[in-house]
Image 1: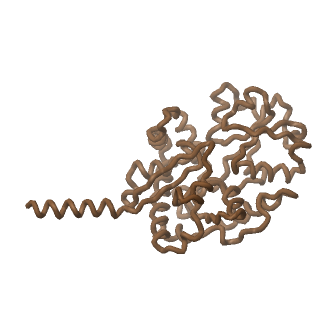
Image 2: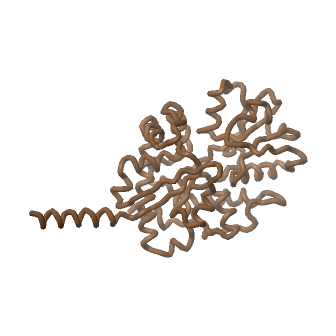
Length: 327
């Protein structure tokens, strides 16, 4: 009997050791924007795939590109403009799955500022996030023919809505699932605001996608591990879209700061769900080549200051992991 128990103990130990470790670096703090990963973790989807996943939250001083370049993560969540700019600068990131197929980025202005259309931006102060988030905005301004510092003034915006509330800027950067809701919570009404969705303005670029280092894709074992990660993550995302309230509770449970509320995260998840229009379909997480090419075209078309100077072509994305995840 003792021998049997010993064998069982060894087997259990070997099983635990056999779990493949995966570290994912998020772009921001724990919130509904990343609900799918937390849901997959909470519901045991990663464990069921034989994975031991560590989810590293981001923050204002954390660059996913720097983390993965320094071997601090196997895969990162990032926006495509930042990923392609990093690739051109020497960090060969490759998109292996595209979770969000719509952009939630918008410029939100107070009606009282006199902004009714993009032509009214001239002479105004506009709040912009930096750290890789400025690329879509600079692209848009170039398309409009506005030169920062001459035609418009840029306020390097913190990750809050204070500049609009305190009238420091006519417009600020917001996400439909985060800062815009903060403005409403602060007492402003939809009728007080004018919003310009990058998607509707024709300058949207792909946002939350999964990226790995190019050389890693030469390793079949790494591809297999990432396929399991993507499969479980997409399952988590499908659950999150179906049940925002449940996802919100899971997100809040993973917020060690205690600042997130279930009510707010539920609203965020409902907004995030609008950015994943192919959830619970066979194309969930699949990077549409046409959407990729559209993003590249937008990033190249920035006049004298393009985000990227050369078309990276098909080398910047791979369907190998996503296809393996479907099997």
